[in-house]
Structure formats: C-alpha cells, structure tokens
Image (cartoon, rainbow, N blue to C red; front, top):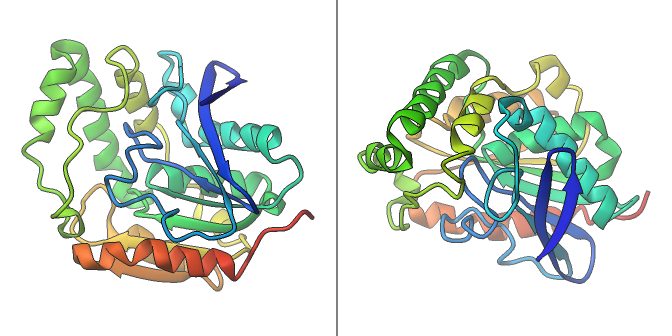
Amino acid sequence: MAIFQTVGAKLAYEVTGEGPLFVQMHGLTSSAWREHRAGLDMTADLKGFRVLRYDARGHGSSTGRPVPQDYLWSQLAEDLLALLDEVAPGEKVHTAGPSMGTATQLYAALVDPDRFATLTLLVPPTAWGTRVPQAESYLKSAQLVEDHGIGAFVRVGASVLPPPALADRPKERVPAVSQELLPSIFRGAAQTDLPAKQQIASLRLPVEVLAWVDDHAHPVSTAEELHRLIPGSHLSIAETPEDLETWPSQVARFVSRHRGQRP
C-alpha cells in the first residue's frame, strides 16, 4: 500500500497489473477493499489493464480532517485528479465507482475531460430534487454519532433492508471511517450535490450507467436522468443478484472497446 499526500489528507492506494489504467473507487463510508464483497468491484473480468484502488480521504486507510468541506464531491474529484497526476501522468484512464465514486468521476471529468477514456457510473446517488431529504438524513446521522457514538448508527442501519440486488451479499454494518471523522463526512455529504444538469450534458465521452432498484439513497431516477443527459451513454438496471453478477463482464466489455491511450 502506497501513500499520496494531498491537501489535508494522505491517500492510501495500490496499483496492480499491466496495461491502460482502470481506477476502482468506492462509496460513502466504504473503502476500496469493501467493494468486492458488496458486488461493486468491477475489475473481476478485466484483462490487459492495470488497476488503481484507493481509499477516499477519511475512509479506510486514508487520513482526513474533521472538516465537512473536505468531503464535498468537488474536493474528492480534485483528490482523484491529483492522484492520477502522481500515478499516471498524461495518461487517459478508465474509472468506475458507486454513489460517491460516481459523483467524484463526474466532477473530475468536468474539470479535465481529456484525462478520461471512459466513466462507469455505478448506483448514482440522490441528486437535485431527491437530494434534500437525503441531506437531512446525513445531518441526523452526524448528530447521532456525535451524541451516542458509532455503535448507535450501526444499530439504526441494521434495520434497513438492502436493495434486492444485494439480497445474497453480507451487509457491511460498521463504516470504514473513524468515529472522529464520521460526523464531518456526513455533514460534507449533506452539503454536496451532483453538478448542474447543463454541465453534465456537456460531457462527450463514453459513459456506462449501472443502477439497481428499490434503494432510496440511490434512486433509479438519478441513473435515468444521467442517461438522458449524457449523449451516447448506456443504462442497465439490476433487479436481482443475478443481474448484479453480470456487471463486471459488462464493464470489461465496455472499457475494452475504449482502451485508453496517451493523448
């Protein structure tokens, strides 16, 4: 595991394999290595690519500060771009990641679209009209952790049913985040949203959108709107664990059609 120093955080990362770079990201309160168990690691069927996995600031083995603004999606995009300058300078890369990872990709691609060969947007989060109630939920979670500890948050989360596509997966109950940082991370998530629709509509690169049903924090409506906004994008929606199992092969075929090269 290597360490990259960025403003306010040390990012833990690892690169394996040979070939064009594929970046596997993760969602809120998760880590790079948890995504495999959740069915959200898209690297299983990749051939001829090297893979970058990293923990976002404040998550997993990466460090962070108790500053909510550090966890805005636009800041996470700056982290990604800085890490790419370190690991793959001048190279077009492929990226994939769920929820927070989807948002990070979109912000980064709007800042520097020439860095990206493809984007794979997994289970896009609440956005625009659906973001307000989700933001309120994050603020309540932040207060719960501060008042009663991370254990109370875990107990509340245990009562939430997973979406059908995750029915056969073990549920990760304990966040891959310290109790000290979790309230700030939640408050940062409450303050952020996807880029404006007109900005997203300006993207001109290959995009795959993969969503699942019956998840209020990751509504199909966001995925459908992203598909509508991004010209030439492809949308696939999983309803069962069997559908979810097809995602790595779908992504492998997608990125293999658009192998990144140095510009």
